[in-house]
Image (tube, rainbow, N blue to C red; front, side, top):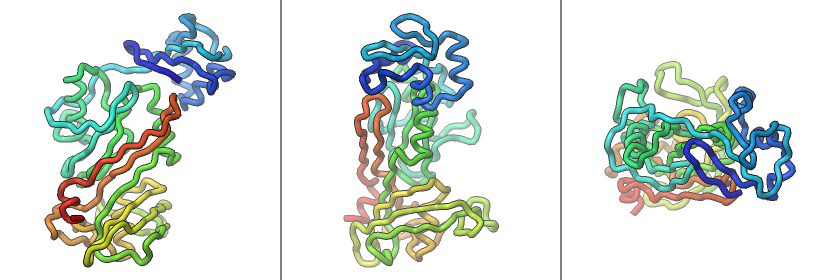
Length: 297
């Protein structure tokens, strides 16, 4: 489907993939809540071919659907920074997060986070939009982070992430070698009762599943590709520690601080998913940060 932003509306041209659905079924396809659908109807915030219609109306090929989809107002303080934009369209913004930076502040009156940098970028590019990150990375983990620009579609992308239809693949440098070149770790993770900032393997924890694949070894260090099937806090770090192969630089979980690495050697390098309207496979890759690349070389 073709689409474009028009002021605070998303304008969509219905195609053969969607034709035959009712408007309500299309709203459900976007994973809109009952409250959102009710407000769209109550406020007449959508039109089909320039006319407000009942949500049981059947969509036809070439119909033009316009929905109020965008909120206004940046909600984080703008802070100037050289933000590394990997991809951007009317729905999404994908950025490359550096190390030693958290995603958002614990109080919106504070600064020095990725959300503040994105807010400044939106300001400079004349985009009066709330700052909505779709997933997080630890302070020292580098790599790809997605932001949703279209409020109407945030539930859709939240669903995609929760159902693992947005694939995130990481690269890590570990101490030692994997027991097998390819392996899966299925160990539950819970809060470490001795430290509020630390997680651990726990029988009473939440299910956690991680796939590992050896890419390259050099002496006592190994470059590993990691894909997580669950999104537990510190999941990759805890699973590596559990098999005696801590991340280089991850002193919280037993990693050594050497070879020039002063943070856990973890990088989100590959992000892939299907576009909600075009069905195009979008895949973004970001090379290793300089400190990890230097160790690999």
